[in-house]
Amino acid sequence: MTAKPERAVIDTLRGAAEEAMRRAYAPYSTFRVGAALLGDDGTVTVGCNVENASFSATICAERAALASAVAHGVKSFTAMVLVTEAVHPTPPCGVCRQVLVEFAPGLPVVSFASGGAQACWSLGELLPHPFNPESLEHV
Image (tube, rainbow, N blue to C red; front, side):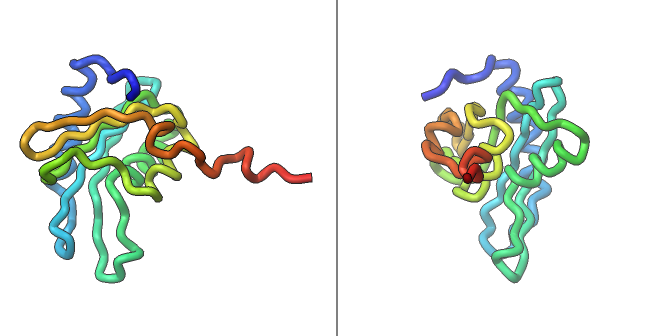
């Protein structure tokens, strides 16, 4: 387990993620997700999942938040909060883990389920052996 960010930070990110979740476009899975990503400069960037009839074209909330942050010049992060309507706290999918680890390998991820249950992980726990820039090194 990783150390969770301060309660006030989590509460702020949770509110932003809940608002983003309400705007999610999930007509196929009906599994709405909201994400709030805290930049090391204090910037909060949100994302929601956007599904597509061509399922592989779906964008997860975590990657939507990350892409928005990068588009705004933020590339270093200190926390992420996820909210879903699931019964149990849900971690990011494998693709999101891989994309997030590029920017913040030790990122704390706090996930809230619909009933208030929560879990906290670090990306290192969720993706212990990532493909990273060092993986591209060759002779």
